[in-house]
Image (tube, rainbow, N blue to C red):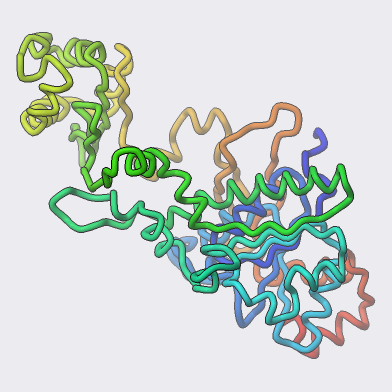
Length: 404
């Protein structure tokens, strides 16, 4: 196996939930040794999140946790114990990178802020993925990804024009911030390689999320126009939406932007006469008659399976795609070809699939190595083999509750 990009890089992960955990998994999947730190009284919140293996709840059975924390070592450490922080500093002295996504002030409460870490390891890189940054009038507000999704503007534009805002499926900020976080760490590692110096990285998940709404922000900047909920419609396309197909709850999305695509759509649908209809002949006309157009499209698509509609459209260059559910995604031949899902064998959950990342490095590909850790699974290995504790010290600290 080729040497992986981050082989030899050592990361301490103090993260809860998704944003920080996914950030460090980028490094873990590409060879870094990542130690995920929790405590038995304050374990990673993802452990209590559904879905659970076979519907049976358990701290080591959460698909949520096991997806985001694959390829990591897992330990427990009580940072509220008088000796817990000292042990944490020993782990930090071993590390190159520290990642945390607590509310601002939590690490300082334990004496683990950046100035404290620099005393332990002068060239340490510290990434902090807080909700809105470490400073400012709202910097210390604790916040969840769902609230950040609303604050960033996604909730405002999601839904139908005659109804209130709708929360997107997931905490959108948690899917965006890790990409920025991983890139920031990579840049800091390169800087450290060239200069020998560490770096402090203050990331705002809110600001990461806003990057993904650049077009509507620019529209307001240039034109003073506030984007509004518009269902599945698009200002520059028609038809544009998800249309019903044969089968139970089966749909296909279709997006027609140009008049040329409209002609191809009508050919695929077997209705070339629609191109002559003055109500549909141009994009302007189609937008003015969109309700009628959507009704005609839905009547046509309902005669075919979603896959048939997609194939007919794509064969003539019209953008279209099946609205896939979870089963479809796991059976998708393209994802299977690219080995998107990795299979891990977990000591309690058994064999499970986890997402890999959407890029493939030709010379240094990421590989599945370790299933997500059970709570405290690697305590003995990390404390005795990596930190070099004697068996006597390990047992004494264990008995004293330092690893609770």
